[in-house]
Length: 218
Image (tube, rainbow, N blue to C red; front, side, top):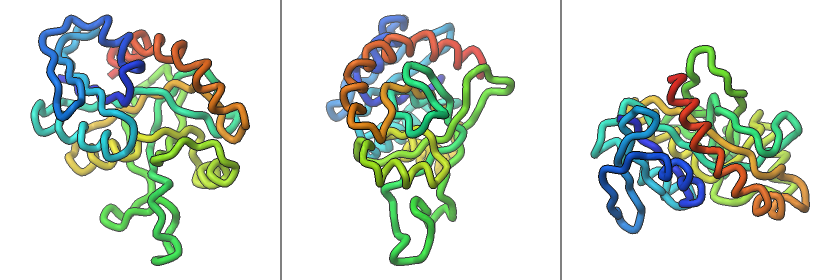
């Protein structure tokens, strides 16, 4: 069993449309779909946006289904010209850049004491054909110049609102995590929100093929 965590129904649609669905139900308002995708048993949960929602949903899948791995897929923003709109990337590690105790404890932004790290690991398939980058997460849409500079200074090139929290949950539980992200917009530009809405459907429509490709590589 593979657990799939995705924030939005629009991001999940192409995957659900290509699943052999066995069961559907709601959990605290979150849609859960069990079935088969790309010859693999999967359970998909639509977590809703944000780190708390995604962490709760991931822990639920782990507690109920004991998946061999979690795959978080969804849209995200690019932070510099090392990534391109409408392309898909795997993350090798994930941070939470809105977790900031730097002024209190003189630690780096994103540093979480209980784990003694800033970046939580994500898995990569051996000899993957995906491009690889680093993800930073927060509970805000990143388009302000100061946010873009902060995340770039951390060494990340893409940002979302879920991956860092999911990575923390997976590390805590000892469950392998794969993070697949499609780029809708390039942050730091006044047109980033407009890019997001223009490119959202195109990126979401590609997730079925990209997820099937990833599962075949795992």
